[in-house]
Length: 248
Length: 278
Image 1 (cartoon, each protein chain N blue to C red):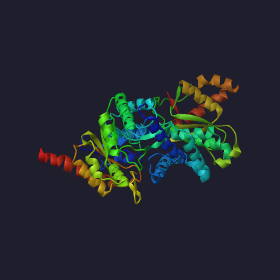
Image 2: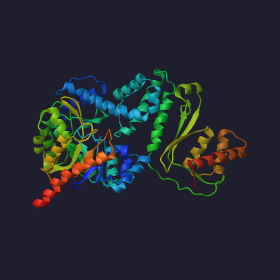
Image 3: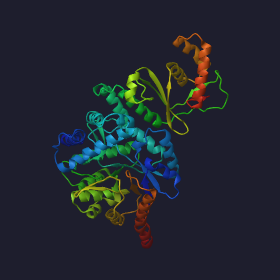
Image 4: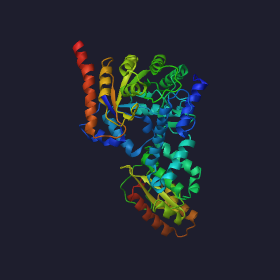
């Protein structure tokens, strides 16, 4: 590298000051101007996170939110060149460092990750979109899935009720977050583990209800295939209406 | 694209680019980092705009002056993106935005030093070779020098001369820096390698203290910056000119008026005078 060690050290010192507010004794700077760099860098990160997590930000107190943003800003080395992807790093940082326990906000992890997944699905790169047909739907109709979705397992139903209430309803919730192909809008729907199993099978390979049914019943220990078949027919009809499943 | 007036493409007024027939920039500029890897709703909007306007790209995170290594994975994605949108002009800032393995998402001043000139020059050449296209480098606004051993003017001139890169002349940045660091903006511009200027940026700013202006891109261009632009255009050949407006977005009619004002100046110096002298 052609950069001298001293110049490198000065640049790193300036960057460190921007993130920590410490170590202001930087060679050849105007001290009265230095704070503007810290303010500008902090605001870029803070504004991005506020936009990405509006529900979390409103739920937490100002002090709690600023603690999360401030700690992330100071201690996390941002890796993405695209600032709009930084919220994913933020959610991971908060979850990995267990701020939910520190703040006594058990639903924090679920809420942050849910808000990030809404962004992720909304901005997910365009993929091959299975071409649908208008043929009649039956249990033998091959089904594909809209490629723009994520499944999140939640401990608290933050997708339905306020996070403070959700902590009283601890359980196992599965939510499918998906993007409408035509409008690009994001929706979500709560599903059962059996539905998730079915969606997972369809996502791997175009299949009909009849093809998935035996394995599904085996996994979930169900003897009455006919009742499950009827149930899945109604479920899939609904999913087709919502444009999550596509008749292939 | 010489003597054309463009504007920064922003989501805030993305529909205007598609549906407002009064709003007709000659080209649009976007930051590739804001679009690489994005699909869905906003990608569709961008693609619709891209069908109507040529696109130039102005990067944010290349961090050409960084002490960290260049991000080759990012460069690969960038190369694909620039090709996909048939981008003819790709520019970046003469600054750094990454250090100690962390992005900072703002433009920090490179120390004006000999070793930094060599370092930046080597990286500009590498990026140009990698992308197989010119990298146009912009003079940035800065609020303090950092461990400087030469002037800003010497630094820019040396980088351009040694790398043989082209220059994006941000006239507002010159105005801001001249105010903040107490030098003459016109003298500064006259001493730049104007034959290397391939692109111009114009923008508004905010005065936050009696002795300090911050380059916000959140206000209309003020008259003294138009005057500096008028002066600059007389010294050089026609190049594309971009209006930057990133925050505090006004009514589209105000943006149109700003672009018209820029066009009046460029037409006066780059078309009328050439027609007379030609």
